[in-house]
Length: 130
Image 1: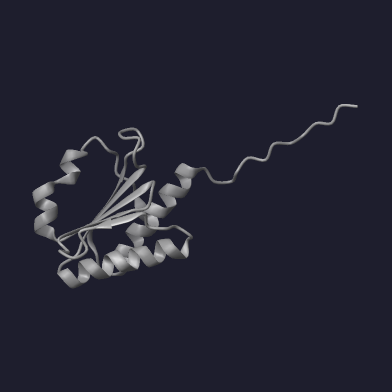
Image 2: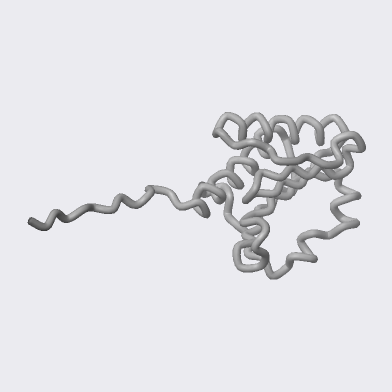
């Protein structure tokens, strides 16, 4: 007797989860008055991360708040921040969530480093849709 087995596919792929997490980070930044929010799809560009989230805060305090609120939102989804850099200086805070890298800048620092120009070939994600 031959018994067929069904293979159950996961309903969400890791890349889809990363996209949803990146969009959650962008929405959280928007909800806390972040500016110039961009999500870059890095999947075809680098094997290190699937998405970059870029956002501006208008003051040191707001940069801190954006970083903290984004981390709280990701934590609520069961995601753990692997590293954080720049929190003390608060001109550019980088949070690493594995497949998603979140950059929160003050406007002058973002302009100086120009990540959108550096990664100009990365498609932009319409994060409001997700």
